[in-house]
Image (cartoon, rainbow over all chains, first blue to last red; front, top):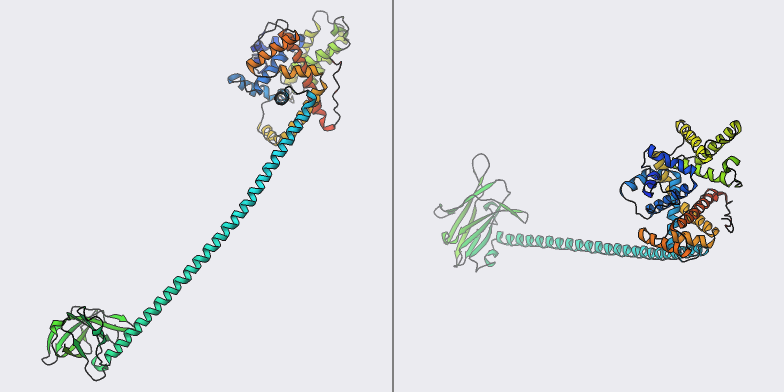
Amino acid sequence: MTDVSPEMGPAFDDEMLVQYLIGGLTADEAEPLDELIVADADFDVRLRAVEDDLVDAYVNGELTGETLARFTSHYLTSPTGRAKVEIAQALRGYRLQDVGVPASAAPAARRAMAWWTLAAAAVLLLAAGWLAIDNVRLRGEASATRERLATLEQRERQLQDDVNRQQSTLATLSQETARAREALAAAGQAPTAAQESPASGVLGFVLLPANRGAGDTPTLTIPANTGIVTMRLQLDGDNYPGYTVVLKDSASDRIIWRSDRLRAASAGGRTMLPVSVPAGVLRPGAYTARVTGLPRRGPAEALDPYPFRVVLQ
Amino acid sequence: LDWLDEGRDSAGRRYLETRGRLVRYFQCKRCANADDLADETLNRVARRLEEAGPIIDTPPARYCYIVAKFVLLEHLRRPDQQNVRPPSAFDRLADSVASSHEAIRREGLLDCLDRCMRALPVEDARLILDYYRGEQRVKIEQRRRLAAERQLSMNALKIRACRIREKLEACINACRAERETGTFLPVSSQGDD
């Protein structure tokens, strides 16, 4: 757009014509050009040539800066300008597609291009379909896996419940065993607890109050190597927050041992007061364990005595 | 017509050329109805000639331009004038709706381009394809080669290409305008130059 034609009007260079076309001239500057358009056929042709190149430059993306801005804001707001740009775009595409091809062959070439486009679209459609089917398959597999996992988790919960039930049953059996041993001890038989851990240095006995005894005073056989004698005194209920126990020698009525504050505990549906006594304080003879209940308020209350005999081995 | 021809009988060609340039003038002034304004200009000139006889102190083309300026000024003063204006929000909305039909429009444009290219002489079709091919320096070199091949000056080649393109654009615009009615039949350009 830079060559100036002496044959087509040398008075104005192409750049000025471009400015005229994109509204870049003042009214006074544009006036002589207006007249030339109507009065000078050659000038009109020249202006058309400049306009064609300007439109092509826009379509090719060659316009920049103020020229591009004015072209967009002025030239493209005219229907005539927009139509020329559309044709230029079509012509550019036509040139790119059909260079070297006779004009009459262009439609066939475009039809061929259209068929290739359709073919490509069909391939893409098939690929998309296959992906969709595969997606559904994978979703199905994922769903089945989730169901299997849920089944396994449910099975695990069932097994855990079974274990809990068996542990509960085992605990019940243990309690019943303990009750059976206590019953044996209450019956005045040889204390079974003494046989539990003779080498540990600790002996265990269960004692019943005197008013519930079978008549015979229970005998505690204490091996020579025993360090601690644990007596579990069966109470009628846990009626006090605390208890104390004193051991008295029945022959002299003298207190030979006194406990600290104790607490009762439940075992096998019964209330027991555990008392650990150093074996050294016990000599062969008759003793009485006297229990005192310590209420939260008010005076301590004496409970039933627990008589027993001691035999040393 | 005699006055326009200035003593040389052009068989109406001069009238058509003048009208074409008037249309062009009003288009450059961004008038939406350039054809109507060009006709209005020529009608006023004809009335003046009927009323006062031939105008001898001003060349016909310049006189037509002077009348056209008044027609333009009157047109611009009219409150209902339909000049091109900056696009409004409504225009942009309308454009966005219209863009949904862009593919159809483009296909129609390409068909019209095909038909109009086929209507051109083969030599003209090849020239216009070659003349506007390339960008910047490539395009300049291409044009020099074309001018040399045809033994034409660069400006003569430019005029020829410009006129072919003008003819092509007119054909395409007519095709697009009449496409919906199915009545468009591009005239073969053999001997039409």
